[in-house]
Length: 203
Image (cartoon, rainbow, N blue to C red; front, side, top):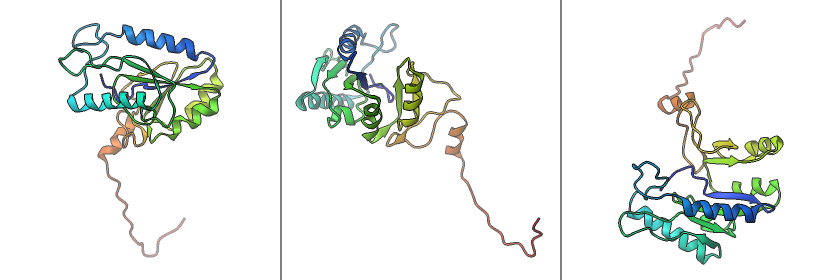
């Protein structure tokens, strides 16, 4: 039900936007929701009532701000804090569902025309944990991995981790890094010691 690096904002080129949207809706409807300790379940509940209500407020704000609720947006059952997998289309950058980290099963599908939009628009958010780039063009991949202000960029994959790969974000998405050699800096403190030398032998 919650994932800090969930791909909740999805930028899709206008040439395939409609097709992608239909496939995203179909996938959301097939997503299995329930007890996360049961085999085959893809999505569990929100952690508590506070987080549940927060996500429901984001969903309501998406509808009120003019985004199109394609599927989901409701509570599942009356026990636990389960939310239907939710997909929005016609999402604009100034909407809360595009600007904030929701930490819930909400996908905002945003249409773009050229690569400059996919550099400028995501970088306007105050968050920058992860991004995924799906492309067959190596130049596009190289350009976006350098331009996006995030801590991790996956190319043609997503949510892939290894103990040696540092994980952490830019801007408001955390401090420092977990995993890899970079995580050791969280436990170290640098000290500078300056001592004047009498008649130093300069070489």
